Image 1: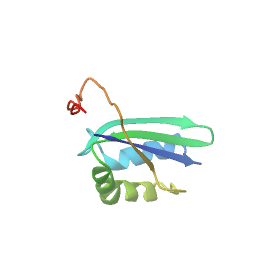
Image 2: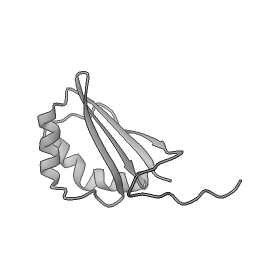
Image 3: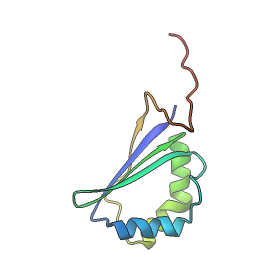
Length: 101
């Protein structure tokens, strides 16, 4: 089942977020990414992703995102938060049926 990843980054601006996205040069979601949402929050920026697994997010973070955040001078004040999803629906993703229990 996919996981949700939430980053709330105090002090981050829309320009810094846009700089990270430009640095990543993503034409589509990275391997394992299912959904990406970003929005301003009071005093910073919020990112909510859905990933196939935390391992795939961790790989993307280590290989690409961490460096892009550093180059945009975005301090990570804490680790992202993760939650296993109970349900996820979208036009592009259909979860496997859960076993009868």
